[in-house]
Image (cartoon, one colour):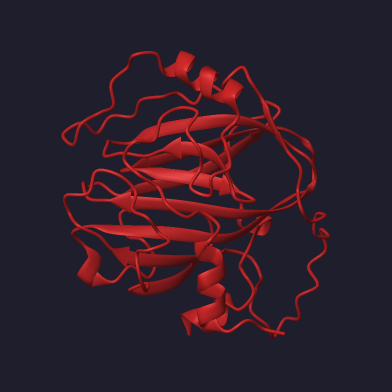
Length: 248
């Protein structure tokens, strides 16, 4: 049975919960699932004492070198079949649902999405490779906004994936409710990565983002076994059930 729009947004809101300005390497994720302590130590060692960029700095820092510690997560669902069984008359199942929210222009960290209220705009995005114009972003949010990208990612080949978020300003990535990449804060274009062993399967994916300091940028990439980083492709991303009805 198809979920109603209100039910869908209420359920996906629980996939990330609260993000705050005091995120530390090794802190708990917004759903209170602890980040792997070894991965946190690896991040601390990789970053060292390097200071976060201020609003007036726009260069890229962080070359995406993975931590030595490797997290391992097992999918709650088996992988989807490679064959596309979607009838031609129906909308593609691929992509993610994007929801946009107003925030205070003085924000210095990601907001608490569990209490942020109703979305001011909804859209479907093909991939998370965005800069400048964000699809469906209302003009009223031009001075500052938060966004949540929701759906799932289909992994057909198990192995070590280097998952990276590049953003200006802050962003976070969660898989099956577990915080994987923390790139929060007000900063110029900055990349953070985590090395994760992923079994084949379909993982619930949530990316949250905010921007109060132009330029706007958000990119999600992966690299399997050192083969080379690429934007997570559209055919590996799947919208939540009922997403198209929400956007209409």
